[in-house]
Length: 288
Image (cartoon, rainbow, N blue to C red):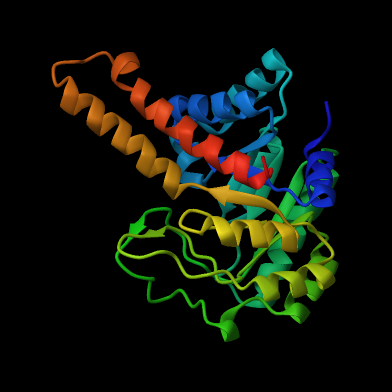
């Protein structure tokens, strides 16, 4: 089976993108995996610090590895949004396929220093784990928002600059880079999320030196997704959209059958809802 590095490289060459979907439990994982197998496209499963604490650090790795081996299918695991070297090390030691050090809210030099330390540890561990860095703060929570958070700036002057990304990738040696290009974590309740700055994406990719990842995909328009992928985005993160679909599935199932107490029955709609969202996204990201 091809490595995650090879699969991302192929997506980059084909002007498609790998779907990265966050999960919090086995039901969400099942919905994502069913969709990916039906379309036969590789996927990355993301688990944030909170999500992997809930599932279990090593348990998440075991779940994804078992699906990959049993079905001979390209499903990979990423330690999403990790805020310390210690927790990056923990994920690397647990056998994750990729890890993100999120120092986006730190001063540039401190972000660079810790990210470089994470890269050096990954290389010393003799693993093919991919290390991703993040430049530009776009918020932290994958949730429904009444408005853009006060500490999140998405105006042009706050986007990742060409010089920042060039220096950061060169000095850290990261395998992937996630910039701020008008994207936002979470989904606005009453309006669509802001448009991405496609021109900035093109400019950053020309000088970046590493495959580029789009965080905060939930709430982005289909048109912007297509333009971003054509501009060179290689991986797209989706989380909030899945959480909403999952919650609605459980809610409707229990409203229709309030006396049902067997989780494997009332969770079916949640799994199916996740499957539908992921299938739609994978078709779009792969231009099917």
